[in-house]
Length: 102
Image (cartoon, rainbow, N blue to C red; front, top):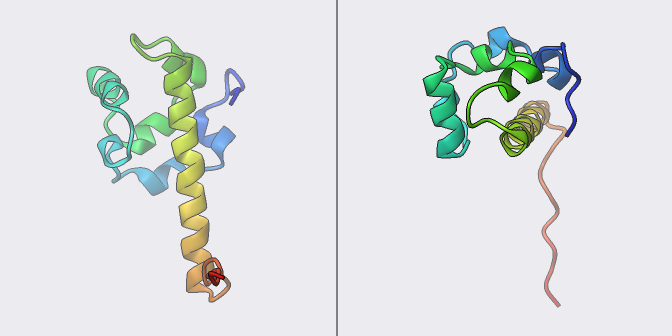
């Protein structure tokens, strides 16, 4: 996924950093390599990460295009999980229909 330069991740992904102030980046299923890059650069919370611009991340040692794709992909999944949880609370989502085997 191409990210626009100069715009923080939270704006591009539609997430509010304050909602993630208590969530450690190590809680998300990132690869060990990415977690180590974050640790080495004092990025400890998801809020810290969301406030960064893509070019800042891409400038970190050992953080490249594949790492950016992994981070963006995880946030897309995170938003889907949150949306499903909200829909379940509202009674609008019951899951997939079970397919009957022949």
